[in-house]
Length: 479
Image (tube, rainbow, N blue to C red; front, side, top):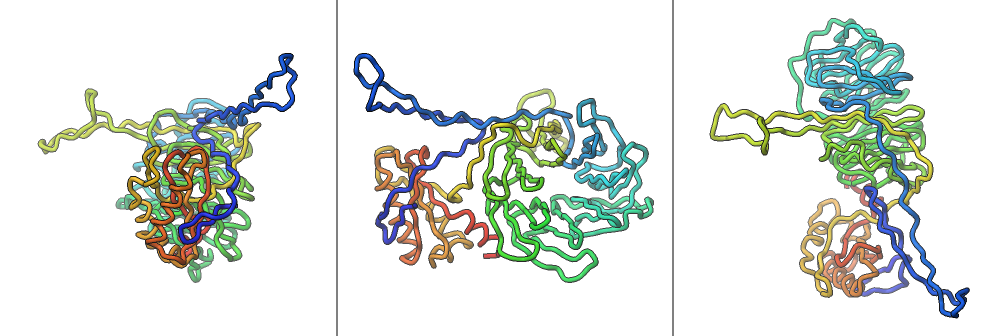
């Protein structure tokens, strides 16, 4: 039960402490010594019993299929092969191992989308168009002149893609389309299909439209240009960078639901029955149960090349999760720090080193332990000096609450709870919480609801947040 704070006072019983989330494979073992009332020692002195938290949840290392790959975010699989892009080349590699081979090379910058359809492959090429070819090789036919055909999907009759909007054409269209004039950089929208509708994301909105045409039905607001979408029989799923969560919407209509807070800028997702796989920008892989939101780390990192991914592509089959990581870095000619001499009009540009990786890992390993959803979405931190009950600066926390257009109204009216989070192991935690509550209430007014909750291990500072589910629904519904 949380400690409810009204009018700057603390009242109510303390909530039992919860376990900290285990992240990035780092675990702190907490060892406690307890004296037993009855002892078996011959000298009659109490003996010590050592207790510890369980060992970390096991993780797995990815098996690398290809390295040094250029723009490998397009990826798909069939029974025998994994297919992925490497710059203008469409590659395939045997799922059980072996060197990748080139299926075809087209005039394009990259291949961001690939789909298998029986014995055929459809793929979109940046600046090259929409192509069709046989899986066993041969030439590729250009069936569409779209400059940036992303997020391909096929049904029995048509192929669908996004390029500034939703497009489709017959799968058996003639392969004589002319090359596009170029492509629009940064247009990274997405679509998925079911039997009746196309679901799409573009700009800041997610919507759906009947395949045969008709009215566009708005579903939700999103906060970035590259929302990841996935469909089950009953729900549409997507990740939202502003809500910092994966959300879902019932296809029959109804309120939005929070699935997991395992999401951030640059993350990617894929759905497999009741299980959701999320790969974060640092290539940490999580397995999430969509039925209750519990999550476990599957792999701390897909690639050890260092840095963050520029893009992530995912595919899945009965046993394995396949991950394509787009990564690159500048390299100075002759070594040294990459730079451009702006005093020279003909200054050489740093070389680009492609560090893309394609790998696979099992979808589940024995002994995985799942943690429940977080109790709050962290919005800011109020910093304290050790031993001092007064904060160094609280303006940051207040600004994130009061200065946030999507939060100020619901917080002032009491529609959304503000959570003040303290470490109960810190001696001054109660006084610090009361001080932060006092400062917040002076800004948001007496109608605001503020709760103080405890989380061990966060140290001297006080965190300020909101309920993850409340904020996600408020944001996605449009405020």
